[in-house]
Length: 114
Length: 114
Image 1 (cartoon, each protein chain N blue to C red):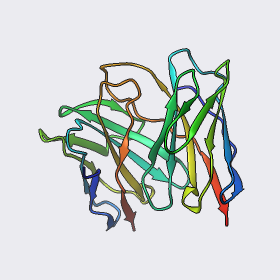
Image 2 (spheres, chains in turn yellow, brown; image 1 turned 90 degrees about the vertical axis):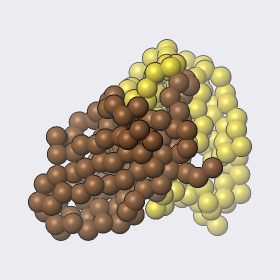
Image 3 (tube, each protein chain N blue to C red; image 1 turned 60 degrees about the vertical axis):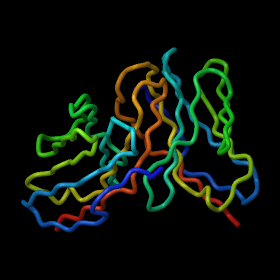
Image 4 (cartoon, each protein chain N blue to C red; image 1 turned 180 degrees about the vertical axis):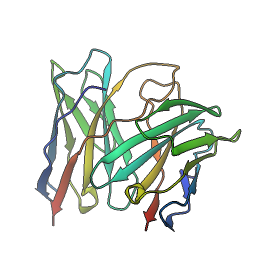
């Protein structure tokens, strides 16, 4: 899997938007961009994924650069519950096949101030 | 729908012993993956099983093994435990066949080797 680069930590205030960046300059044309987060004392949980277009779901939005070499996870209104480590992961796209293991980096430790 | 369950949640063993951890995937999920999480190495992929067959394996020694049963439940075994095997062991399940293979993680088993 191609490598991703994320800041070690970020801090934000509660009820404000948070923009978490991820660089993936060696992304291939078939790589999907996935985001997972890990809350304290829990297993990781899926947040969102995308290929080329920006994506929205109930948890967050994903903005993907036109050249796909970077992306940004957007939490529109952070709460204390959003404090977690956020992982940006590239996954080769395929259908009908098996699950290759996720390659986790160090992620970004998001701190939310009340 | 019940999530991924792992047993036991906590385990203490001594060096040289062996340990077996269990994972029950979400009903209907046929793929199970195992990960090791340590403060130093982060989250690392161990192996993945689908239909009772190991399809993918990470870079871990042969002391780490696993299996999957016909009901998709999975076990992983670590023999001749070393201090460095102390970690959180996470299991994840997913429905293979879609393009992004979102993985659903369990809460993990915390293994301490003394």
